[in-house]
Amino acid sequence: MSLTIVALLALLCRMSTHGRTLNSFAGPYIAFAERFYNCETNLSLPWQWAFHPSRFNPYKPRELQLLTGNLTARNVDMDDSWWLKVILDVWANNQWKENAFVLFFKNRACSSLRANTPSFYEHVFKREIKDRCIIKRGVYEVRNAPIEWVFPNIPIMPYGRYKHRSTSGKADKYLCLSGEFHAIPKVD
Image (cartoon, rainbow, N blue to C red; front, side, top):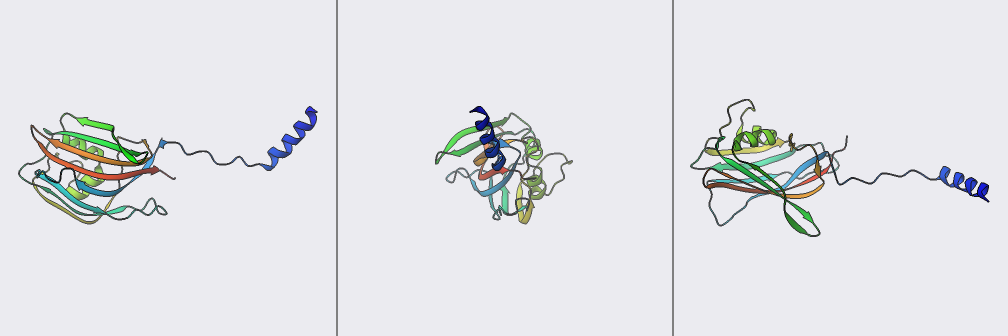
């Protein structure tokens, strides 16, 4: 009896495939932007943005998104005396789960922005990473700038859809910028 079971299992195992492994929920990722907007539409803060990313092509995940638009900085310059708070909400069960990740930098807002979003910083502010970190007031405009959405200090992230709110200032809040992006598995 046991010999026939072993023979039957051997035949079944020979014909079966091992199948694919299940995707994990987190790991190395490719991020792409969906849309950008200001957090508070009825409140006029000194810093505002109006950016439009190009569509992401899932068949060409390594192709960089093009960013068009501007960031307007009125009345105040950003430097390392500012604080920065980044709140990430995650989309789950057909609603936003607020405060999934909260990153707070007590000071050094400009350096934190430069270190965590190097491609965005270089293209929008047209500054080298090595320069002293100060962002002067003015209008920073980009037209079809190829942005690589890499975040060097966050190498692994749960996959999904995110909404971010970035607030920053000194004593008062000077900016509140939002956007939506996706994190998908990185394919090598």
